[in-house]
Length: 165
Image (cartoon, rainbow, N blue to C red; front, side, top):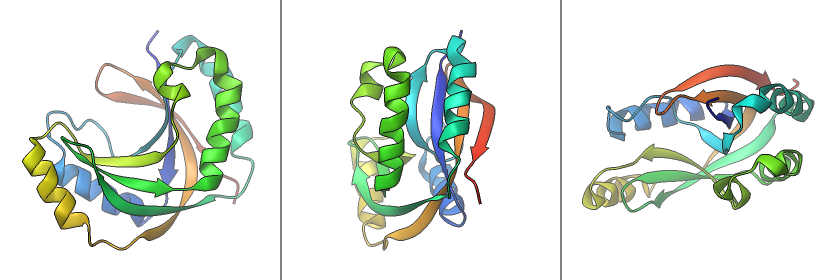
């Protein structure tokens, strides 16, 4: 079964701004989805019911504060840092629940980001990083968690879990 991906969904206008940057700067043949904050990259697809139950429990609270910070150079791309201590704590709680299923990549996650460019020549990434470096931090909120099925490139939406309002 295809693996599951868990994301954090940002509110507007941050989400729209990041989507626009991603559409403009991500190679179109590789850009299969909107800008996103990945919390877990590969949970086992056969555990969908258990993952969904954990996400349902996790969103029984107000939306979480977050800040879209400065850009980070990835070598062959650019990402924006997401500063969200409460979201990181929630992710750590979920990681304990998902522990038996975590991949090495998901075990080691310590920071959050949104990639707006990837798999481009390094000089192109450096140019975009320089152009975006003057952007001020943007306050936003995490308004939902998303559950996706990874289909070898494109992601198929499974469910969205909005935080209580």
